[in-house]
Image (cartoon, rainbow, N blue to C red):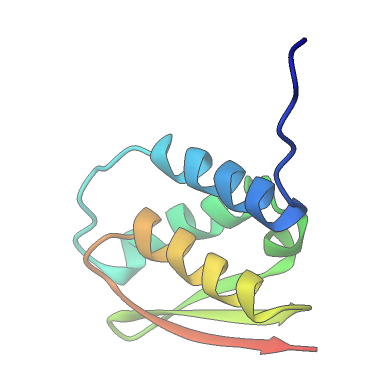
Length: 98
């Protein structure tokens, strides 16, 4: 008899997001200007729906993430997605948790 091991929802989301981030190409980003559209696209294509509503703006030499999510987990996850997509660019996380 084969037993299925079902992960809790949070773990499934985390695994899905990590697999998604691994699929992003690792082209070096030289500036926040180049990283902004790439980071915004990474959030828009995320398997986690809450991240799709967030915004990424260039602010000087950094990227500013803004919007609202319902958990600190999603706030941290969004930051990691942007950080990975725009490697080498400073990320400022201004996401509010409801």
